[in-house]
Image (cartoon, rainbow, N blue to C red):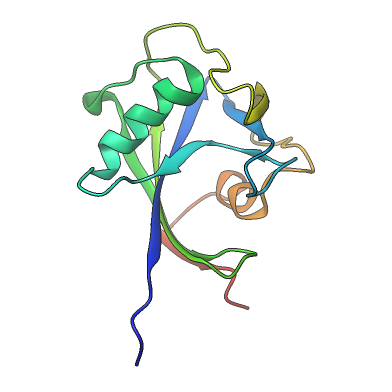
Length: 144
């Protein structure tokens, strides 16, 4: 059996009261035009927690700290492009700095949304995770 490569990524569910911060992707080649979370690929030799901390600054201009983030969910997901991905989601409701779009070439906007009224163009597996009352820690998505 041939080995394959998984793409590891870390996602940030940044919460403020009953809302979550989403960004609208553009010019990336992945889910462009859809709302998603602050996220990024894990670099070789980088822990998932360092990735989500780095991405919070690179995409949102804020500093978050390990003591303030909590692992929330893991997915093994098959993307539209047939790539296989391992995603670890972290929650955080405490940060330093002002949230701002640090990558306007890749992001149309950053916006807070209630998890009860997410935009129709939210990336499907992100919408599924944010809308459910989770009673487990892991899902497989996109294998149908």
